Image 1 (cartoon, chains in turn green, red):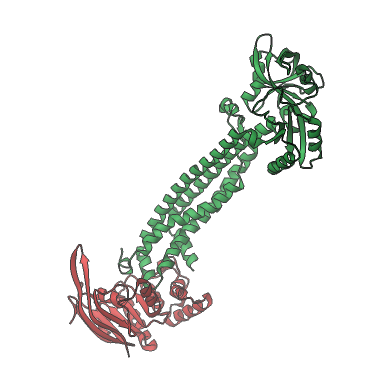
Image 2 (cartoon, chains in turn blue, red):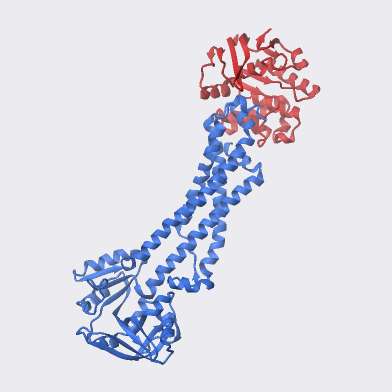
Length: 404
Length: 222
């Protein structure tokens, strides 16, 4: 009967209850949208980096990541390759030659990261082949080069144009080679497009005069959630001459930024929740003050303070639960289409691409966000009702029953 | 059999810092089944006395014994429990819970006593039948007349078989015919169930029907 009483009390002033419910629902939608938007943006930043270049795990000679010199090649690439092939948790891997160099056209030149890749294997660890917007991926010609659109603009080259790449060889001389632009890609990051070029692995090895040496294995695990486990298993099979790094080790700043953003979202959520608490306090206080006489009667007929307190908390809780259910449903109805279609921020393309996000952001709701709403909103609804409930039980029945 | 006794009951209010001596040395004894009317002009202390006897307020000095139990020293929680088990209230403005039906209003105090839904439903409906208000069971207070609401309030007051029912100006908001019918009903309950009724009123027809009249003037029994 207490629940019945609480329920009917909520609806005795429909307009006020609907206003409070509306604020709770809008608050939930705002929380879901902002969290989903931030999740989507941060996940895109990370997944774009992973899928375009970083992959899940990289293996190098120890020290290579801090000092990418040509002397730091993988000591025994065949042995590593065998271990990776034998590992059932690994979906794919690819070998890379990586070094710095200079690319020049007839009109301009630019410093670049030279990526010597095995085109077919690279397809299994990177999506760069899917990002080609002009021309094509490698067809088997040793002089083919794939460059980013931004770099092509800077060098003022197009498909079929000649470019020259120069880089240091291990003996201190300069190795160089002429290439023809086969494909121009456009990734999610304009900075990446300016500086990463792709050439066939064998051509890179001959240009750098390093025989069949390589500098990196890029590895993709079967299960994204088990990357750290796979990393440990690879590491345990290799000696101390190697460094095995997950994307978290390779992108510490980005991972830190994501953690920081998630923390800052808590602050945003807290602000909304505080606003909701005050809305509920205000509404429940009005509800209590409107019913002083009634509360006095309840006290007179022997209803204990604890039950009156609980009845008012129950009213807050019911508002919170209705708001949570309707807010979550409304939030899902808004978010689900956006999760698949994305939100196009065409006018901010330049700045978003400079962060490696891409112009279309796909909001993503996580279970944590939904659980957060499911727990927090009913909880704050109860918290919001505590003060009004306290005020109610502080009434003296003798005064309350005569209150007009 | 004595069920209520007061000893030198005093009540002093503070009205904007000014002490107001509302009751002075009230000594009275009430027996089971009494039909008492406390009468007197406005400001004589009727409501104050009723509040003290109803355990809604505490005396400044003196003692109140109900069933030989001193209620003047009880805590708020104990008083609440005492009111639930021993007392019934009828108010001038009926004061039914507006969001509950007549039946639910009557059942409410039984719910507080821990009766099961089935038990309280049966007892409340039987009582409504007895009081001739069975047809009001599903009506909310705003769908009932003042007289009907006050009959439901009577049912609410007596449903838990209280020792004493306190009625504060129960006919003040009713026309004389309706008031008369209500008093008939309460007299019947007094007679048939031996419930002790204590009224506060300055309504002539209430005073005329009193089994025993206590007149207050300036906070004293005269």
